[in-house]
Image (tube, rainbow, N blue to C red; front, side, top):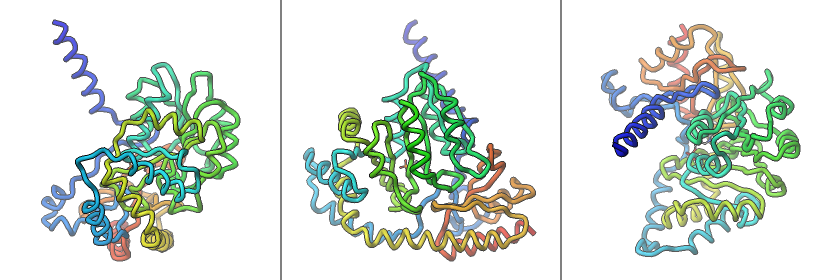
Length: 375
Ligand SMILES: Cc1ncc(COP(=O)(O)O)c(C=O)c1O
């Protein structure tokens, strides 16, 4: 009898999880499957342009594979290798300019968001997030049983520090600020983030998933603060979404304490691979510069189209709003094999689409197709 009751509870939980769509921060829609879409359009999968997940097409896959093979040759997978973690921490510390003990690693930033939520939030607690922002914060907070409160950005997309502070109560344990923000693409200054951190005791989690495409990081300033954590990932600027590697930076007390609680989820292969890549950052730098220069061209060309509003971007995507029939434009692009992200109706920016900055030829195809659809 008890087992049956437990299974009912589990089924209910699983179903609730499956049907979770989010409502506060943005639309939790799934990506169309490229193979299925290609079959429907009767084209080959390579002809489908998948520009909806902010992946990085500028990376040199052969270079990455070469580094990976080198690592694979050196690593003995039969053993635990704590040295690999220590050396990885050192390399990351040098990369972001903070002491190595301030760095904590994990399997992608989504896993680390989950860990931070679990660590700081309990049922009955509250978290605050700017809106619109990365929808995953809402899902993670919901899973923890805590409550998420959304505070809209100002009309000019700047951070509403007073608006956030008005919502802080003794139950508030975590504040999410994504910078550069997905999906608005803009960055927030240290002054606003510091004002927020200094005016409350909640942990301010600054998600810098796209920082390398922007004007700089707050990591070095964050380690001087009691309650700021900066989250980073290799999925975007390093183009390694499939590797699953992320890290966060916090002060000398907080980071080592949190590090003891994070599960040991980074393999020796990933640790050594990331360390090697950091030592060859010159190659990665070129990919980042490639994205940035194509992003500026994409923004300019989109702005030259009539009937399209375009947000500035410090990330590897551009968010835009066709003034009439957003859904029609989304479908029109999809039917011609160009997949962008339909962000749904959002506070402050309304109903927008988001496109990943692709290689020049991809952006040309996207722009040509968009022109066709708009006409
Ligand atoms: C703002 C932001 N944070 C985190 C992530 C997830 O990154 P990761 O691949 O490291 O889990 C994304 C992914 O798109 C993102 O947009």
